[in-house]
Length: 304
Length: 136
Image (tube, rainbow over the protein chains, first blue to last red):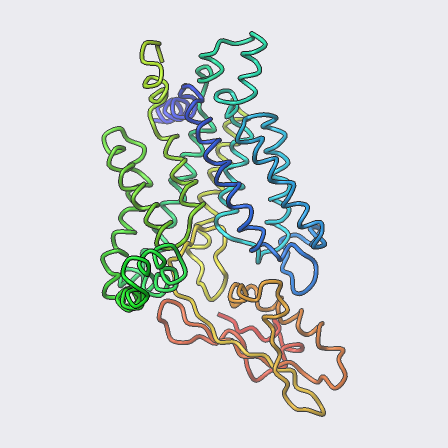
């Protein structure tokens, strides 16, 4: 039994494949980071000195407003380097240091989005995410050290860190569903409380007003803020999140999981104004595709 | 291989255990950070703080404006974080002329529960045990 578990463990973590999907995820993730930077800048003001602070560790001190602004400005070129796949380890390490310092400088800076991005950055730092579709690999091709095929798609290698990012995604879905599995959420009370304000202040509200007039938004809000209206969406949300934590892993369920997941996150982005986290999660779906799927489609006459 | 497996086991252990801590603890006791708790709970609190002064009687303290982002004050309304807020308010106001004591009231409801008092309104928060935050 132990040796079967050990064999299964090894096979799971050392499965080989092209890092192409990981490279695509790197680009998508960099795009999400770029857009998240401004939001986190506005919402992480506890890293700035003055007022009440609740540090995790006493030696991480808040900084001046000027230093805080510089830390955010400095992130942008680092995120661009990450997206382009140039000096990737350096840029990720610097991003981890800056974002980690800001995040851990005060417990009141905690938000799930920056926490998720920190974890993914850590795993990307340990991964071959710049071995394909990157300026680094392109430079190696131009110096005639690798073929064009290898520069674009990388070479087959253990996908350990990619798998770990996938497991992390499943953990996020699972625990998010666990937190929602209680009577008040399943009765629609939580969604009813959250959705009304989100619709009023977001893209969905603006669309409704434009299509049907300003009064329509008030009527929609009235309906949405009734818990009984939100029972079905609430139950579906919980079922979807539990389902996605598993269904993305298996070939037979993956197509449905992808369709449902895309709809789910686009819906959240539109209705609840949660854009960048939704897009980062969607970008991670690339990692769940069978290795070399996209490579085979892009270069059908070459072996995967 | 040993280093890789050690990293994997450590990472997975942390990422499974840390959120579990947030799931198992009451929202009245902690904010539940690091547990992927996203838009899943209704938690609302009413909070008031007063500095009792010699000359002017009770003076209301706008405690949320001591935060760089006042809108996040609700993250503090739990038994783990409130003592730190009270300690800060005591240090901030304790030296002011005429200050005698700090009183506060924080009551919270979680997913429609009856209001639960997290702070004893009858005590001086600066001198009380645990800065006046109630036990579970």
